[in-house]
Image (cartoon, rainbow, N blue to C red; front, side, top):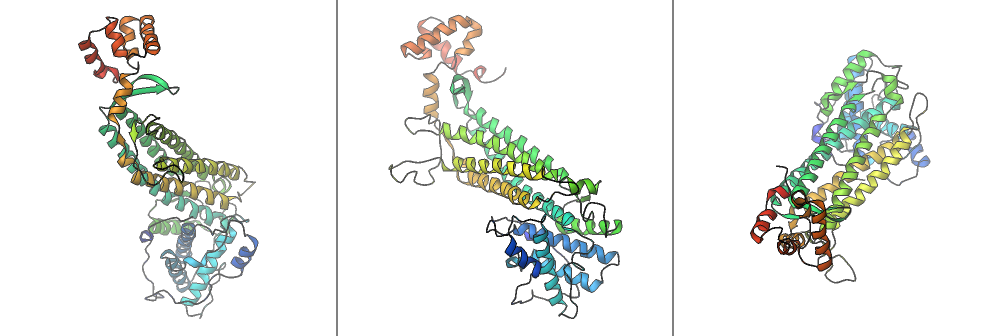
Length: 466
């Protein structure tokens, strides 16, 4: 799975150990613990998300700074570690993170992978005059149990920001379609049966309102992601860390990421209960459910072209069949539907993993990371494709909508307050049995004149609250 992020957000000043160009290494930078992990965890064939590994490196830059500022780590080693981390962020070590995305050990393998790469690179930066140790130096005052959740939260924040941008485009596009179709009156449906008049614009405006509500949900769910447990170390008690170190580390991490990260008010709780990830997944499931409904509506309205509803037309993106000539399928709504099914399925995995915590730690975060990152990414990518290749090109088939409306009895309900429910029902029954239009029956039964019906049928009273 490819995760995208603009690395330009990460900038660090060059230190006295800086070289003008990244080291031209001809070797593997990771060490024995990563090698063991490669043997132990051959599961998916896919490495951990590179974006997560870079965020682990970002945490390591911040902790090296924090340890230097609290006089625990010599400046020259701290600077070498920070520069090694910067090279990782810039993408110079992307091939050095091969550990499988599902692994035992609460993420220790992916964590040690970064520790080892940074230690080796820092040692090379120091021209091997000092050996930088992956645990004693790079991992000073840290644990997998505070580094990995912190890096995961940063990753989720980044991915959600991308999703917010895509969802904003979706919302804007739906609003534009609502305005474009504002005057297209059609048959509204309940239970998949003809109901009362509505405009195509009102239907798309409802979709836009839903998208705005979903945007608010995404923004709201970010609030618990800014609270991180770095400094809690193994179980949240902060063993081997200090308050000053936590303060300095967070200050640096805020500078690196651009997020206003804060220390969790209860680090023991933050280590035991990573429920913020479940909350994000739950919101994504709401988004998925809403998108499934909208895409199904679009597919149904576009059904045809001769034997379906045919109220809208979607752009033909590709041939629809290898056997049926000329067939075109609604591939973009179908794409988003499948993406949303994946999100719902991933949520079940995340739910099981989050509830599987025991005592002081939840060890199932690797599978949470895999599924949560995938959910946000595929939802973003699917909606981006829909925005680009479908939404803007949706066309209203005005004649089809008008013909269906004219031959239906959708306007009957609007007559009921004036002539009574029972009389209106008899008019509808005659329309059904005779095949005549509702207009013809209303005029013939002397309920309205032709002119009165024409004015009635074009009135906004049919579709708007007055």
